[in-house]
View 1 (spheres, rainbow, N blue to C red):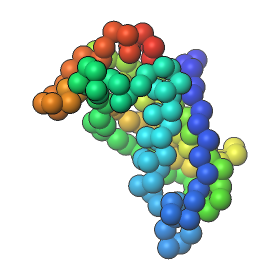
View 2: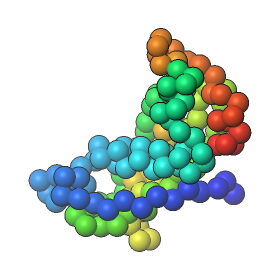
View 3: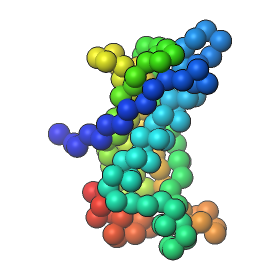
Length: 132
């Protein structure tokens, strides 16, 4: 079984739509926060990587399926699992849970690019070692 990183998020009023449920696009924000905290927990500082190596991670593709609604004040549990680690990309499976209810699941592909040219670049060996 692959290691699972978990990050808590609370639903705020700004996250909801006119119907009082989490606006569908906000799950992408929640997933982004969880991936950022996963990198931080692994010891990867994205700002230093950009400043010192001229490299950054960008989202290349997303596919999200919605299963159940989240509402104001819900405490969510976001998960991050690395599905595939490539030379210049990482494929994630992410989920949003509220208690034992699966709310959303997504496949997110992130690529490493040069900051200046915004072209694909190899993930630095020391970063690969930390996230493998």
